[in-house]
Image (cartoon, rainbow, N blue to C red):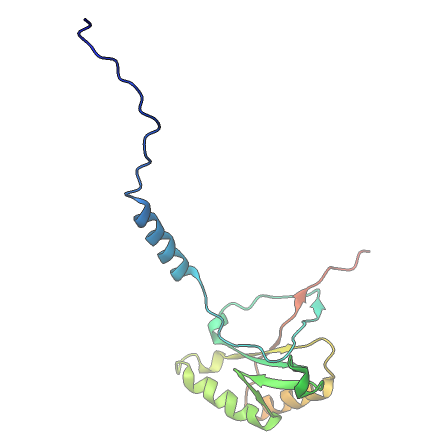
Length: 155
């Protein structure tokens, strides 16, 4: 008789899953920290025009957005409308919007607020001019037009 027994393989060993919950929670926390929730639900179509001379804004926390374009719901018409935060608005509501945006910011940052106009590329300039006039009346002189970066013309 042999003194040593040979080990017989009894099939594949089970995979150790004790660290699996730690990995899942680590991934969950990673996505919770890095995900940004959408702040505004768009009710107007905004297909931005293209531009060649584009600059990025440095502090996006100091930007308030005004959306102008045709409503996504066709039942509301096809004329361009203004959206402030999550609601449709009229031109005369813009001064109150600017005042609320200033109140929501720190006193030191109030002079640095930029109003960004996200305008659908087929919107007529009349409504944009009206919005700009109301922004001027509200002393919001830092205005930005949001665009997509276009291709430069080849020479």
